[in-house]
Structure formats: C-alpha cells, structure tokens
Length: 135
Image (cartoon, rainbow, N blue to C red; front, top):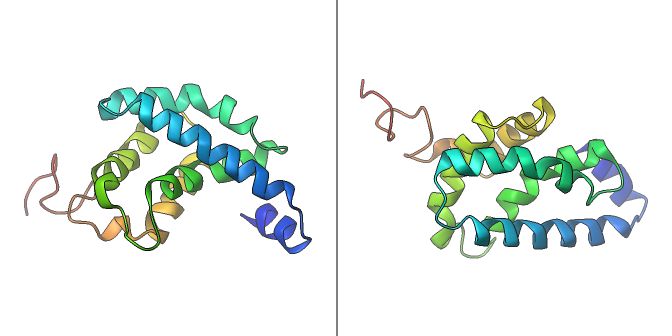
C-alpha cells in the first residue's frame, strides 16, 4: 500500500492503467468461476497470483493489490455488495486457505477489515456463521 500511495502522490498515471487491467482480470476470473466452490476458488487464486502480479510493474505492488482489487471488483460504493455479497464472503476463506503468498493473505485480511466484512454475520469464525459452532 505504501508503494501505491507514494506513486499516486508523484502523479504516476501508470497506476491507473494497471488497476484497470486488474479489474478486467478479476471480472474474467469471477465470471469463469461463477459457480465454483470455495476450494476451487482458493486453488485458482494460487494459480492466478503469478499472472496477476505480472499486471503490475512491481512484484511487491502486485502482491499488495491482488486482494484489494479482488474485493474492489465485487463492491460498489453506492450500492454495496449487492449480488456479490456471498462471493465476497467466500473470497475471505478462499484467500485464507489458498497457497497465495503471505503478503497477499495479509493484504486480504486488511481488505476484509476495510470493507467491514469481518462484521458480517457470515464472516468465517463469527458465532453462528456457517461451519462454526454456536456458543
């Protein structure tokens, strides 16, 4: 995130182009995997990471932006998650169990908190969430 903010502050317009390509890549990814379960989604994230990082001119920026742009692709600032809500919840688990790098997983956790998905009733680990024990 630091590199992103630094480059935006310097007026680096290549960032806009890279983020647009990332958004297009996520749209294709989610369309292709529209009916995939979390396990499949997770496996494909690991396969997708090297290709995704190549969309950016810096490997560290690619790792930083992978999770952020995934959630951003599913979210609309005016209408929220809408029909993408379930996929966003599944994406939390998919990133967590994927073989993506520690950096990508860390950024996924940050994105989840930023988008307040950690407060969602179906958040993995929430009391009463699917797959958890009720207390």
